[in-house]
Image 1 (tube, one colour):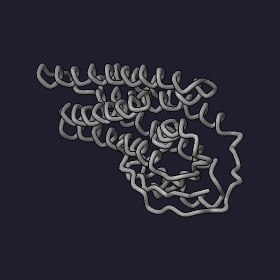
Image 2 (cartoon, one colour; image 1 turned 90 degrees about the horizontal axis):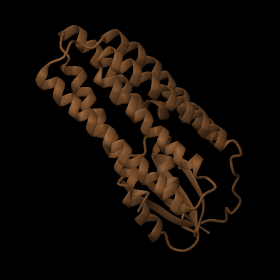
Image 3 (cartoon, one colour; image 1 turned 90 degrees about the vertical axis):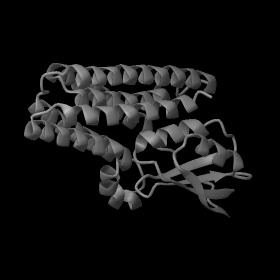
Image 4 (cartoon, rainbow, N blue to C red; image 1 turned 120 degrees about the vertical axis):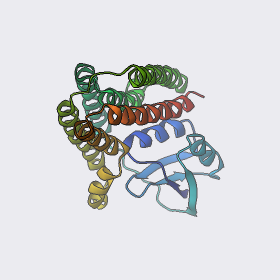
Length: 264
């Protein structure tokens, strides 16, 4: 048995972990995957050479590179019996906040909230692909990934169109209070999701929970929307809301292309 350690520089949260798991699922030589999200490292226990594993990881464009490869006598791996329950929990939280943010975003005229809602939906897709196709074939998972990826891209393009319309035609200021309050709740929700997922790891990694939360892209996006809300109020302009919305839509499309890579 060999142990190959990868550095995944763009692995910021469990959503990327799930993408990697799905991508590597069809490689029969892999016995176990051990993720260290805070340090952005992945240990792969496998037989044979790591070439096919490395190729699959590189195809996701998450900045993967091999740090070390060594032989190991570790052949007994514990499966987390609660993994499916945890995935259902974070899926429900993410989808619930997708609904909350898109509704409040449309009501408050905030592009930032609408964009963040799509980011929540993107995470829901990733967790959902694993859950709904957990007992299915690889081809079934690829079909689901393809549908989810194209749907995300379509929503993001609609979002970009709305940003352009508001930038050219003008729009009344978004409700900055709604932007800030809803984003704070979304921030807490993301923290809970990350905590629950990290809790399923070994106790030795417990001290990493805080750093995991604060390195997450989702948390950064939430803070960005909160900042945009404050700037909308201080500058009396909707431009900060449009800027953060554009950035998040771009991230959603980037995530969609990663999901589409799973369908190849």
